[in-house]
Amino acid sequence: MLRAIILHGKSSKESYFNPDAPSSSNDIWLPWLQKQLILEGLPTQTPEMLNAWLPDYRIWSEEFERYVITSDTVLVGHSMGAGFIMQWLSTHPGMQAGHIFLVAPSFGDRFAPEDKLDEPWLGGFFDFSIDPDLFKRIKSLTLFHSDNDRPRVAATVQHIRETLPQLEYREFHNFGHFRGKRDMPSDAFPELLEAIKNKLDEA
Image 1 (cartoon, rainbow, N blue to C red):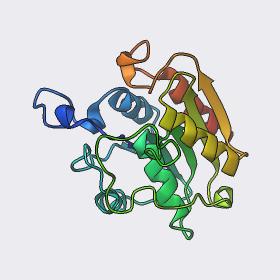
Image 2: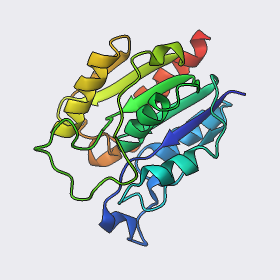
Image 3: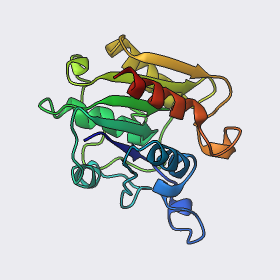
Image 4: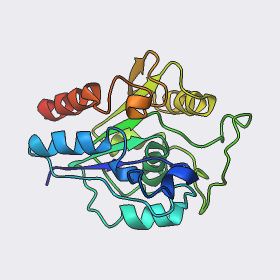
């Protein structure tokens, strides 16, 4: 069955424990995109990761694996959520997925040690190598990057593009880390929605 899963990124500790702030899975453009895809007839889930301010790969994997992942599953990840998708698929060589969309993917400070993180990664987060044969198990990979994002994201994007040159690359001007209206015109992300719809229309 065709379905979609949207994964949020790492939150700040202040935002995570702020009772008036939205949960990570209901922040920025994620709920907007979920609603738009549902209106297109595509069942869409936005998992909420426990303690997103202090990410643990084991916790993320357990939550993610509650969902059925097949060659008909569209995967969308923002920031660390995009990095998680790359790690999970690379370390599960028997798994397939459909169209994948990475928005401002981050592997922490692995490729930009000068851009140090405030909190550690747990559970082996980003202790992996990208599967260079990933395209044998997925339908497509589209990467969204802004020309003014932080160094750790730029370094991650460069590494992914060098490892998987077949991917489709979309660069935006002055969209920061794609954090909704904090970086973009609004909490809508029509460019991402259109890209997903175009891929589904190709089938």
